[in-house]
Image 1 (cartoon, rainbow, N blue to C red):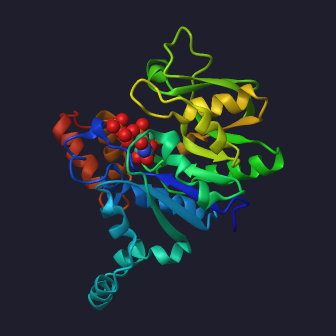
Image 2 (image 1 turned 180 degrees about the vertical axis):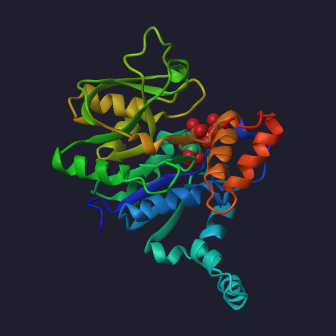
Image 3 (image 1 turned 90 degrees about the vertical axis):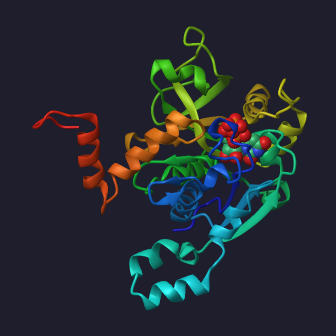
Length: 301
Ligand code: UTP
């Protein structure tokens, strides 16, 4: 089913310094999580949400992403001849029915600036932003973007943000929202970047999926770079809220856990979770972990 908001921007231009040396000469988005590179999960999620056009904001050294999504007829023929139909299915990006476009952020001036590179793509229409280093849910069947797009249209919002409740010790790592209500859909009064637990307005963390009205571009332009020279999207969203624009939060469901691959511990954890969930090899990975961890017989991992 088509999404009421058919355009999505996927920023993948970040330097990925927290994942060095793995990201020295390959993009963070191409790191494998079990079977697939991260960006493939993101693209498949958007395709299933009914998005039609995807703009990747790439940068220096990110050509592997473009190569990954280019049709490779030679490879497909070889797989077909050798009867590897399961692999054919996983590599057939055309079946997602997406138009994939690329633009380039030549200087990494932050996520806000990366999104600004989507301005001519979005035009006067609202658009989705899906961070290229975050996977939502283990099974790839998240409907979060779809619910966010529906909420955006129904409530005439300016911004919709996916949020997820994080444990108290994780609050200081994320943008945290100040919710103006309960439930799965609520207004957001403001948001605070990486607060300490005692001043955090909630434990609801911004989770890598957004819907924006094109007014966000002016807001981004009005934001000053932070001390690292980066334009933060959080600052632009806060401005929308301060000017009375409607900012809504959509809560991710328990099965839609956000896997943020931006740092090593989270990348390791995500890889293990996805490897354990693999339909063909998960059981073997589980047995191996039991052995490695020395779990006594009869105890569950
Ligand atoms: P991060 O905040 O994780 O930054 O980006 P980063 O640069 O990728 O990684 P570190 O901090 O150096 O380890 C969140 C998302 O925004 C994109 C990233 O590619 C990632 O998908 N991004 C970030 C850009 O596209 N451009 C930027 O200038 C910054």
